[in-house]
Length: 323
Image (cartoon, rainbow, N blue to C red; front, side, top):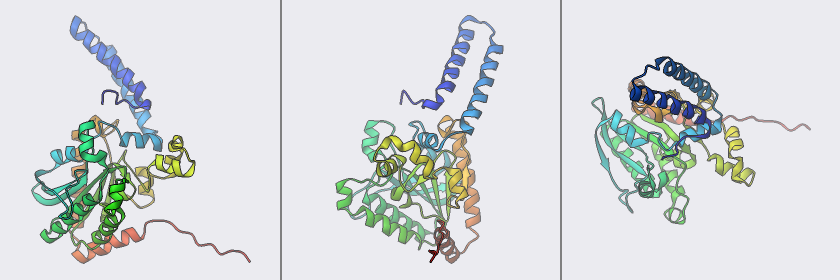
């Protein structure tokens, strides 16, 4: 956490350090250096605009993984009230990488479910580094079906590199758990909104991501595989992750263009980790707008719209071989 400055952020960090030194010098010596301070602040703003306006896909992935980026529980604290967490899949155990429970969004009852990472090694061990196991997905669908009975809209927060690939996960049928979620989420009769706040990796993301609306934060990513995993398969070397990120079309802009994401939620300058409050306000505004629109649809229309949305995903070309 101490060294949380990404490579492309270093020039900005150097100017910010210099600005802090000028401000400290002014306060300690009672000398007016406002002209120098204003000049530095202007340079920082210009450099930030230039840097973050031209990020590569790989740099977006790095921002999505930033150690100070807000996680699900950070947003829950700032957006919702009366959150009551539920535990367990009623089959095996509780998975702490997936959190869920009822809450209120400006007084409206909703079910919130999402993946949670840790801030330090102890918490990451507790959260399994945000890698859900089969019981996490089974807990998630249990809570979704409970929300369906209660008539409560469902909001899922996605931030995971993928489902846990360990032996014990395979022994408890991780693929089956995700497949069941995909099938049963299409049958839900309440609005479902899926929000990608950081990493949206592979089946681990889609396992709670079958929504009527898919929203994505400006610097989040959503992909069939992580760039490192793609590089290891295609080029047999993870060092080609940057090249893989370019090829995967995983950025918010690309996803919106391809019709996968419905809305891109803007982040504060420099990323969501720069201002939790501003990021949370933008998410809350979007969620309320989407719920208002989806609230006009009947249960049957919600199911139909969700199904049609996913059927339309992907682009195909048919070619006839020349004789």
